[in-house]
Amino acid sequence: MIMTETNTPVRLTPSTVKELKRILSEDNIAPGHRLRIGVKGGGCSGLTYVMAFEAPKAEDEWVEIEGIPCIINPAHALYLHGMEIDWGTGLDARGFIFNNPNASATCGCGTSFAI
Image (tube, rainbow, N blue to C red; front, side, top):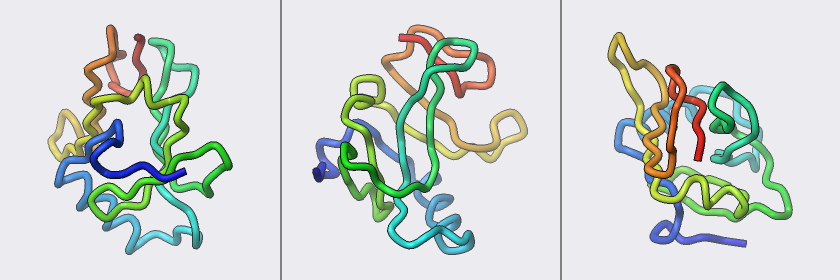
């Protein structure tokens, strides 16, 4: 199944797009793998974000966001709707930062949240 960039639940900031394109150009990403954006159970707040280059599964929806090939399990879209992923370079926040308007609580490291 294919999503369009206009109806994807996730937005990537320009700094995130730049970092992901760097990873795609420098790392040895297997052919056919796409960036999985999702959630899984765990972490101190209940759910943890998932971002990894993986092979698509049958239930995944495909979308290209700002030139980045992505896959999202439609069951995760509820938890991701309206989320922005940013790339931080400061001393207090280096790495991917998940700004999720659906989170009722987040952990200190920002990778775990509750709904």
